[in-house]
Image 1 (tube, rainbow, N blue to C red):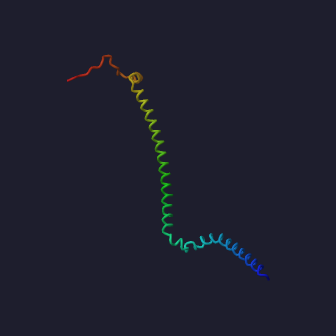
Image 2: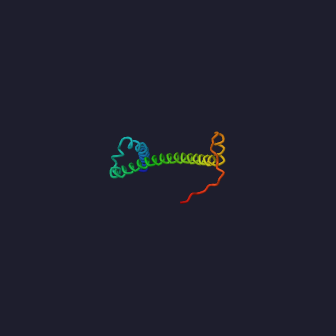
Image 3: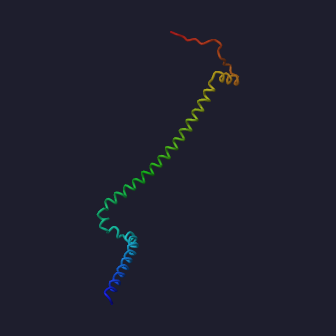
Length: 128
């Protein structure tokens, strides 16, 4: 064997070993997460309090968002209800105004055969 052939063989074996290592790393990430080796990692152990804080704030963010959406639906419902009641109030006011006119009152009194009549004399005020 030649010295050049030995170098080629060692180079090809090195490239094969690198490919095997890459394949192991791809499956290795999933295995590290599923196997719990992720928490034994030095980087994770040093920053576990920061990770816990981020997770805590994430939960608060999600719960606040849910609460916001619930309150917005409640506000929308109450606004629609207020508008409906406002429209009903305007309708009732206009009906009351039309029924309380003098001519309408006279018609109602005539239809009920009442003895009440409107005065023909003008009104006057009494002063002390």
